[in-house]
Amino acid sequence: MSAGMQADQFFEVLKSRRVVRSYTDEPVSDDDLWKLAQAGRWSANGGNMHPHRFLITRDATQIRLMRTFAPGMLVTPPAVVVLLTDREVAARLKWNLDASYIHWVDTGTAAQNMMNMAHALGLGTCPVTSYSKSGVSAILGLPPHLIPELLLMVGHPKPVSRELRADAPKPITTRDLTYWEAPGQHDPT
Amino acid sequence: MATKQSTAGGVLTEDEALEIISYLVASAETSLSEPSHYAIFRLIDASSRMIGLMLDHETPRTGEFLRRFKAEVDQKKVWMMWDSEAFFDFVRTAPAGVAAEAKRLAAVDDLEVKEANA
Image 1 (cartoon, rainbow over the protein chains, first blue to last red):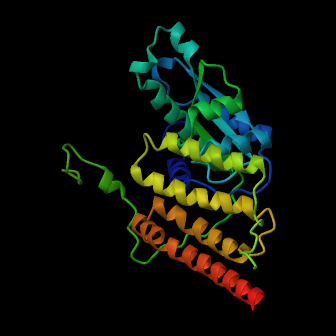
Image 2: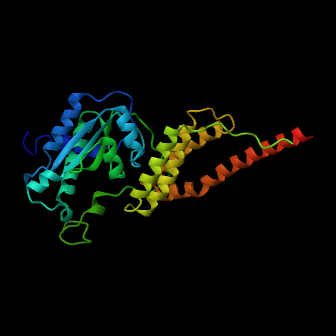
Image 3: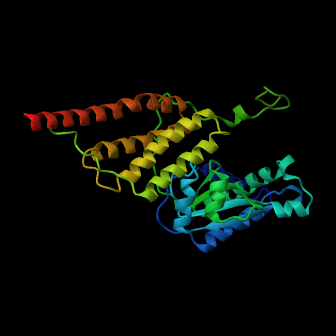
């Protein structure tokens, strides 16, 4: 697919994705999880350095225990992709991660690709950054060089209704977020 | 003389209690770096998680209330993400509902004591 082809459809996928915090018990297939890993692999990546590793788990006990150390996991999903930074990769590249945020940007691009891919597959996802790194590392048995940067809950969405008050704040708009040419200039000149 | 009714219902297993402890200490850590109102959310969510574990056991005295309160907490806690004022309003009023249940239990206990001593 060349850039521009089916752009409207592609935008609909982007626009209709939501964070999903309610899942059915249906397992997530190997094929679907592999597609998420591939989507992460093909994300924009600083310097093509690929400091990340993706740990996929469907182990119910592991997920349940991980959730106890992850306040951001409001539910227990059928699958989790743990996005890790491999500090050994960084060390080989003489890359000082403690003075860099590139690997966090890369975590975000990989996670977003995975979330969009999941949505296109009919799956729901929720990124989780509220967790104890030491606690989650212990539960997963991670060696010290693998740092958990983000937990991505994955599952088949269970429909839920979201009731809003009539005077609830209006969602932020693209215009609110966008400046043209200068800060504060919300419209093209 | 009769004493206050035993309240063994809803007692957590050691593993379940450890789940709550894990959640609380992890929340303490994440609260070091997260926006301050997240900590409020964690406490409300902790109450839901604990109720969920309690309801896996017999809860003859509080079960009805706990089920109703947990459903309300789970519905309203997520307002924090898109309607924070509504969430804060809920946080302000939630203790009154729990207090009413505590008073109801105390009244039941007092009545039983009085009846036993009559």
